[in-house]
Image 1 (cartoon, one colour):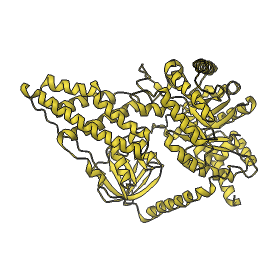
Image 2 (tube, one colour):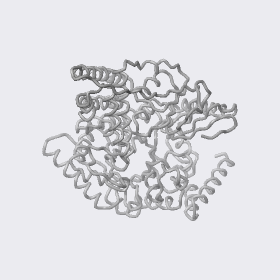
Image 3 (cartoon, one colour):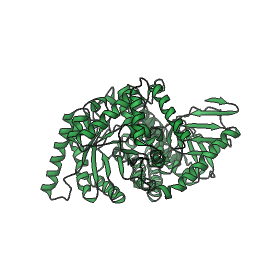
Length: 586
């Protein structure tokens, strides 16, 4: 927290874009006072029955909420509540609580508290951010169960009026859903992560959300004027008049810009000298397809299929579930392509159903293509669904984190085996599907010429490429300043991969955050890249930047930048370029 005049400024992490202006409402979840009471042996069965009734009541409430989510938001998010239901039925949780009641002869509340605390401590020790966030699911379920045992109603959250920015220590997905449907304009949470189910709900509702703004302590109160910027993770309390007007102007400009999309969405992304750039969308859920079409995406450049696994956790998605999802996307995007990245569940996106080993450094361990080849049964299920779904449209298959040519060849052989299997079974499929790989590690850059001859396309994932090339964890605040997209090494890598694609006949695209930043458009176009994939909301801004570019001049700019020795020098050169464009009126 910092003080700027009379205002308080909190910095967090933006996980759902947008700007919200409103008044604060503080929601603090109070820890339940749980006391340990001995239960007479003759009353144990009654206590167990009381626990079972609370479980049944909680399940009914969770199932009602899940059905509401299905109707209002979609099937994917409803899976959150299916996961809650599974926790309530799990022997590790519900069974352990009942055992505690019987063995220790204690009240149900204490048994719930003791079991949830023990399991929560186990989750907290897990290195994986994704699995730690599954600990959030456990806490959410426990809160539901406590309320059922203690007769506490949930209705107070849904009674908050609209125009409010909610600031909370934590929110369950169902609470976020209720708040969003009541007209809440923004959310700020003390904890949480980008892949939590609450973050997923916020994005689905287009509700600005920042996480990690705490602890807030006693510095805030209700009914304060606030600005929440979900783009950069800023929360401003009691901003001065000038700051407030600046953000209001940004909101108005965004509204005007959004209204212009209907007119501009079909305009091609063509530079002043006639170079066409294809703009595609990165998505995580099928619900985002409507947004991709609304903003003029020419297809899906990256569908992150691991989110299907995360949403189905603790179960694994079936072949038919995969196939139906891919078919739906293809039919809605026709005639444009849909590029599906095979599951990337390693690193910080682990699934305990897939991983059966603990790793000290998971980001450099069994993840990406390494994991898919090491777990062929799971990979086969996804590949069968992909080749089956390909009969419904222009589907492309892409594998993540390739670092050597042997992985690509194994991948190709695996695909041939799956196609042969489908043919033997008489299952409808398309045998010829474009195959590609992500370029995310320095090794892939250096063998890009070989990869381009072996594959139909390559996609540069700049997020990981920058991180691995510069050895910088961008989520680590101590080295965040070293995460430099314009580092000379990154620019040389982009040119090398673009040239390899031109020589080898493979289509080259960029699907990392660099593609979504209109400021980097001249850099990417200058590198010779003509296919960019980004979040749907970024497409209009990037398109506008491209339509004001001269591709030949951008090439000269890029060549100039390659001769510079540092990111700061390149930043200065790019700023000089932007100033010259402004002066010329371009």
